[in-house]
Image (tube, rainbow, N blue to C red; front, side):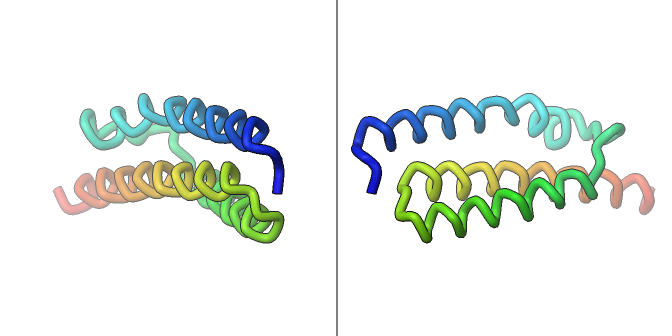
Length: 92
């Protein structure tokens, strides 16, 4: 297992990465704007994050595990929000 300060750097990087998605979540969930979002791209990113999560588990990196779980959650919220917004437009 990596030393604690290396894991701490990874955790900080993961947390900063989560903050990068907050404006997108705000656009999709609060303002119901989804134009320009590619659900295919977000799905591919999700698969990549899932593989990084598996890698983190296999190498025993707490930072990779936590960061990827958090990021997958955020990406999932964006995908779900965009799907809901698009579905409500079709129904309306």
